[in-house]
Amino acid sequence: MKLLQIKFDNSDVEKYFNDFSLMQKTIGRDLTKTIKRRYDALKSANNFSIFLDTGLGKPHPLYENLKGMYGVSISANRRLIIQPISDNLSPEALKKCDTIIIKGVEDYHGTKNEWIIP
Image (cartoon, rainbow, N blue to C red; front, side):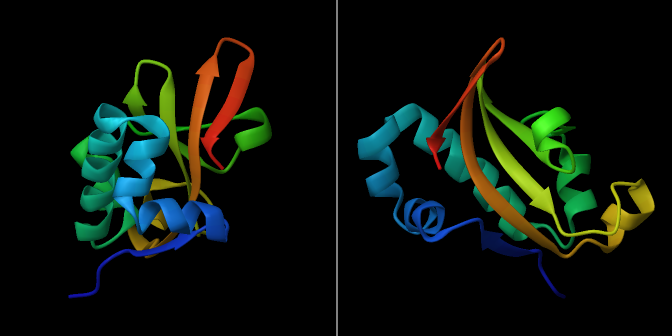
């Protein structure tokens, strides 16, 4: 059975997701622990739709400058940003989506958006 293929937006993001002790030093133990749980759930899904169905982190489509991507909550104001590689974001297309790109982790407060793992 084929699992969801996970790629990274750039080498910096990949570096953090391949070294959770580095991530912990950068953003703290609690956030890292939650991010690792979300990452492990993504790795065990067969497609992006299956991950969405778990509801873990309240995955939701994003808009404006992040249109075409999904946010997955890490804490009250931090979210994992994921770009599904799919023709569109319809439920049918996401069932066929077997590859995603992790863009990073964003801290958002109202109108302020700041990447904490770029």
